Length: 595
Image: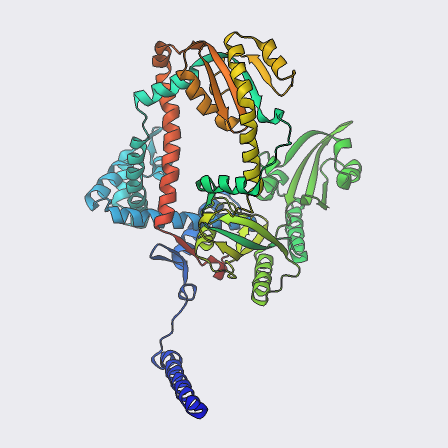
């Protein structure tokens, strides 16, 4: 019997091995024989995927080089590594955004006809032409010169680029125009906003917090569970994940320090060779505080100079160049412009010591190996609390649609790709995932207990609250204070004029809007009780001053403009979220070394 069973098992195992062998031949040898292999996107030169559209590295790199060239020409100097890195991120984000818009516009079938493009190009010169004085005659733009440029065959590449910009920008502006139309507030909306914000009431009130009842109330486990079950919807939570956060800091290497020193020494040599020091400061200094003034600093107290440079300044003569000196800011050189009795005029050039691309790559490779080998020695490792997968602000890096996608779709134990955030390189791993549901009773038991106790304290206060209503009716503050033995936690007060945007002593900020909406509906001298989570506010309305409708007519334009800006911002923000959701990003840029 056992032998027969083993024979059957052997047959099954044999077939599994045969199928596996055939599969290996088909997938590996077969792939090599026919020259076919499944390549990863980055192996095919794809730097990102937006929706179903793949952005090639060349597409990104051509735009990146164009921006580098334009920025270099504008600044009239070479860019620093830090500036290049900032531009790389900016261009990548813009290429992704432009792709999303293009896909969206194609889906809506919004585009410009060739005839429309010709008319626009003919009637509306591009800004770089309209602002170039070479096309001016007698101080005014000469349209005839522009038409001559249009007929010049050598300008075809330039106008082809202008055409692509128009095809990209105008349909986008059309969509934004429609959104802006939706943002326009009605007169009624503006009127309500004006009336609500400018309505003023004066009240006499007593604020009675539950904290005046001694903390001697006990609650049973059954009471807590009863509250939990009856109010379960309040404790509903979305899907959540717990993260392992592994990070390293982009500290500059010794090679980075030497590179910064070489740069500052090269600049000093140029200055010593006769190049204007302030021009060099304008071109190369990384001190943003004084760069716009070409590095000039005037009437600086000698005693306030940093200790690292004070003695050198005291011993130097006017015109001397000091440095390079290593300061907390980086490597600096200085030129003494003028020495006074207690002050000094000087110019400075700063080169910061920043992490190079090579250093950053070494750190990223080190983190990749640490993840691969599950050995995080030398890295900072933290564990997050449970984070909702729809949470918009994420640990370390803030907003990131790619991390949001990872939180939603990643598997337990899986690591995200490596991200850069300021001076930090970080990766995330999902330790645990909890499905959408309800907070466990044990986890929120202290919160439930506090609420049940607050409810019981309110029941104990009910009788006194009824007495307070009578005292409020007669504006009898002394009797209210005596009822609570002059407890300072009980606030009894006749207010000044209150508006919804004002601070209200004793009333929780989150309850303010609800209170004013109720108070506006009350009659004068009508005694009312506003109950909030941790107490009662017993009050009567003494005065109610409504804004003059004539004042609204005078301010209507300003109010509608403010509402329009708020509505537009909200609509655009929601639209951009929907666009990101509709065309999600897969970022493969970490696999490319971009210089």
